[in-house]
Structure formats: structure tokens, C-alpha cells
Length: 151
Image (cartoon, rainbow, N blue to C red; front, side, top):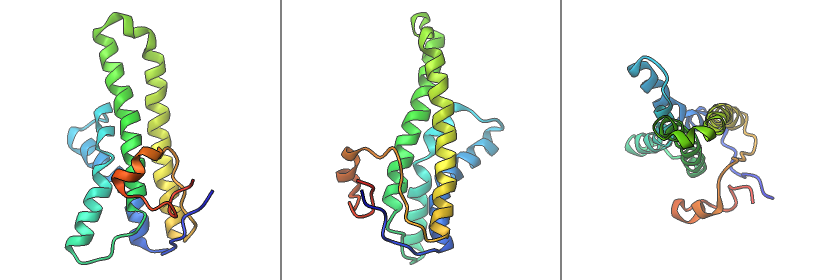
């Protein structure tokens, strides 16, 4: 196993790792109440952060791909379980799996929030970053550096 080797210890690195929560918070403020579909907005945070950083000429933190990969997987778990809960309202046979979808929704949401805050804290304190839930098949499309990812 390897740990991340990039240790900037900057505020921008901490903001990058909190960025999956920003579109979610904005959507909650606009909608007025938290809804399950808002979990599908997690991946937009790292993407917006990178676009803004590149547009303003700032350097982009090398672990942004890890933050994006984690937010993709977290939004798939949270959004997929929310969709499954909605589908179980329409199809009576699927209502048997509703408790499992509800459990996956809440555990996925709580875990995503806690991981975002802990990775932001670790980036702030220049501690090596390790993201959970990043499957190997996301490495090639996102061009994740194996040195930055826990093997």
C-alpha cells in the first residue's frame, strides 16, 4: 500500500476536498429541503473547482482526480439508493428491499460527508491522503496516478 506523496498543506487543497459538498449545500438552499437526488451533485464540486482554478491561472492540486473519483462513487451510492427507494414506491415487490436502500442511502451520505471533511483536514495539515471506495476501473478514465492512490 502506498500513501499520497503530495503534501501542499494549503487552503486551496482543503477547499478542493470539501468541494463535493458545495453544490449539495447550494441545491439544499435553493430547493429548501434536502432531497435524495441532491447526492447526485457530488461530482460537480471537484470539476467546478478545477475549472475555476485553471481559469484564474492557479495550479490545480494533483489529488483532484481522487476527489472526483470518490465523489463519483459516493454519488452513485447515494443517488442510486435514493432512486431505488423511489422505485420501491412504484413497484410493490421492490418494497422488500426498501430498508436496505434506506440503509445504503444514509450510510453512504454520512460516510461521504465525513470523508470530505477528514480529507480536507488532512490536506490542510499536510498529512497523506487516502480515499476509500475508488475502484480500479476508474483509474484509466480519470488518469489517476498510482502513486497518489492507495493500492
